[in-house]
Amino acid sequence: MRDYSVSGDFGQVKFYNTGRPSGRYKSAAHILNMGWHKVNQLYYIQRQSGLDTNLLLLTRKGKGLINIEDRNIAALQGSAVIIPKNQKHSYAAAGGCEWEFYWMHYTGETAQAYTDDILNLHNNINIGLNIIDSSIKEFEDRNWEEPELMESALLNHILFEMLLTASKSNSARADTSIASDMIHYMENNIESNFSLSQLAHQYHYTKEYIIKLFKEATGITPYSYWRRLRLRQSCRELQSAGVSIKQIARKYGYSSISSYTNQFKKLYGISPSEYKNSERFH
Image (cartoon, rainbow, N blue to C red):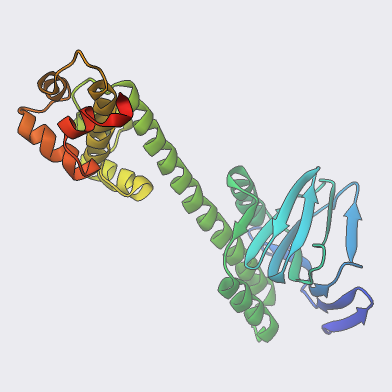
């Protein structure tokens, strides 16, 4: 059977000829059906009982709206979304938009293992238009000696890219969460001595990695953030008439008024005494 195309009021569709599983390769992933759609608002698919296979939707252009078990997902250019088997779903072009996408119904033990790992991390993953286009072009060219194995390799490559992207994104979110935890720790221990080694030990990272992680999340090092945090806290005490600048400097770890003044002025543009005597506090 050859590839074929049809069109209608809803848009254009193309169906690809995919190979049938031979049963020779237990590890092979199988693309059972595959196609390309470029559709408008008249296009709408709804399946109350889902499918008996997984469905992969790869958005090339425009925007689609996907609903899986009453959870809405926006499908944008470069995104890959898996609709798991046996789950209620619907999908359509977003209002006022055309939606160009590829779809694959697939099965296979290896592909299912990839799918389970991906769904444990995220479902809507932007793998980029280049990966989508290059993968589809390879399929369309398909001058293969072993079509069943090559289709399997192509599908597994796309799923691998989804898993890799989801894993990196998950790690980035985890790193941001750790940076937030460190900020919370600093705020709750503002009068204690700062220890980068203690933070590294607490989060089981090296000091160098802690600095890199924190700087990527905030733009500054943990020590710089700690110093700014304490200077900001010292501003509140400068508003108190009964506390001297010398006492405040000592409380926040400065060996002298001059070093405290230098850091304060560098951050706020005025000296602690000028800040303390500012009319805004009287």
